[in-house]
Image (cartoon, rainbow, N blue to C red; front, side):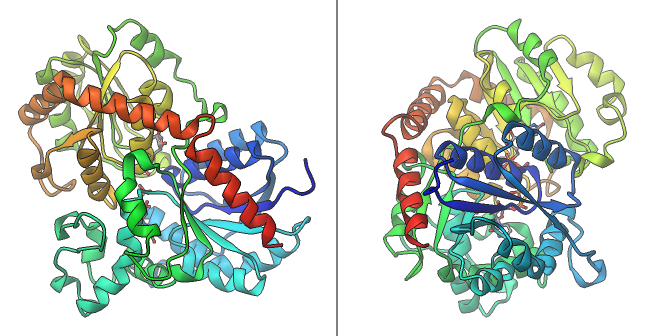
Length: 460
Ligand code: UDP
Ligand code: UDP
């Protein structure tokens, strides 16, 4: 370890969609010879999180683990039922315990990089410690523009969700009310409260790292860094695309073996990420749709938000009869899969995705076209970008999860459309090239990290 390299602590919040990019960032920092401390919160919400942290720490013994034991949360004081949002709040209410933990680290830290949803609770800590504070924003630059502009927008609308209209963020394509994360439209919701409390404080940070690249989000990055979105906004560093790394590899031999036997580009991969459970009715329509599409498919079924609660098997969740009918052309699983390896397999030609940001970037990395089916949160805002960039298509009438049950016939038709589209394939391949160029020698990722490292060194 070179002694003049900066020491950076990383503080992810909750959920695989947050932990994964943090660990990819940690890997990139280690490769840049930074000293890295990973703050691990205990307990975690899902088993996948604790498993991935262990895999990461075994792969990188040079990374220091800083265990952070959370105070129990009185649930009656937090207005949400979502276990991940509740964990955000648990971390927020424990944040004051971080000061003594971080202060004891040796050599002293040059910067702290935390997750979104923790900002306003972490600022007192970084201020006390005189520590430069950065954010790794785990969604798109477009979502970040929305997030940083939202307090201005909401206060003009009297902070009353009922009166919110579409939002015109300077320099960005407008975002309609129907694309707002639904929790923001529920008065006094925990997510909305955190979102606004944090958004108001963005100008107090030193900078923002976003897992994106010019080839995907040039317009928004320019609006953010050109001071159009918010005056005085600290720099936004496009540090993506983060590629998947070796430490994440999971056991997916069965799926890869099955994929090996399918023709190139013939399989549609269907997954809605790590924390979206579909209704049973919708699950059955998806199954019907896959059969109707006539395509080969690899479908990951999820029945519960948190993996610890998954109890019932596929026969119960999907139904025996449908499982039987799907055998001819598909592989259906109900467990954690190694998505990056699946998307990188040459048999996969399309991805039905909820548009969690990591999934979008992984699809871009592998040049796999997306059929966007946003379910919650930031996913419509990401889906707009998937469509506008040419990486995929989006059927807006499908709405949010649970607003409507989308019928199998329609799902099948749209899957056929995506899988048959030369245009989408060409566009996705072009985006893949851009992604590889950004990450490759002399690309923007290396340049941006150098810039950040210089900034951290200068801060000490
Ligand atoms: N993922 C995976 N296997 C699964 C489900 C998810 O590898 O069975 C990974 C996926 O590749 C991505 C992350 O988990 O890196 C999910 O993050 P994303 O932002 O796509 O969605 P979220 O799960 O946060 O909704
Ligand atoms: N988000 C935010 N501020 C918050 C909480 C969330 O800006 O306080 C954004 C962020 O872009 C995040 C998205 O909302 O990625 C959705 O958050 P959530 O944790 O629900 O979804 P996940 O990223 O786990 O799919």
